[in-house]
Figure 1 (spheres, helix red, strand yellow):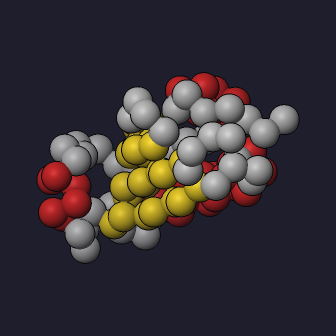
Figure 2 (cartoon, helix red, strand yellow):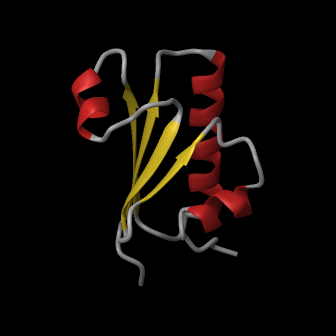
Length: 95
């Protein structure tokens, strides 16, 4: 079994772009990662700038897969093909 998947999505405020990224990622998690244990954290860099600074976030939205190793980053609204996003994160789809 895969270890817990830990994802951090960094957004800047509640803009349409940020909301789209959050919605897309939640859908992918619920549909494609449902059989795996996962944690999804949404961090607003406007209210938690220290988190962005610690992780060297230069653009939003930025998605970081912390676990399982190795960490991966994806920058953008995540609106493309979910299979490509999972592949970029080195995560297996559930089907």
